[in-house]
Length: 78
Image 1 (tube, rainbow, N blue to C red):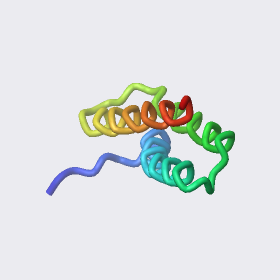
Image 2: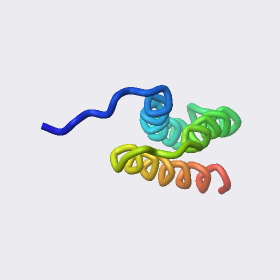
Image 3: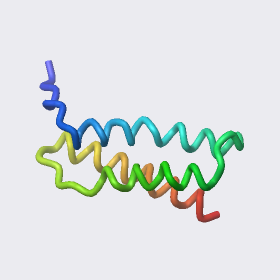
């Protein structure tokens, strides 16, 4: 069985950001979320990546969120 990392505030915020990315993308795609609100939510996602992960699991989550963040920023820039 894999060891689950201890939930820290930083890890919990990162997990929330990871779950928020598809919600933002969907809201933009079906026009149920304004670009301004999506930009604010994207700022939260970006903020969650501003910490140094302590292990490979945390680093993988940071990498996943960072990739999603780049997709969101590209969508908002277009």
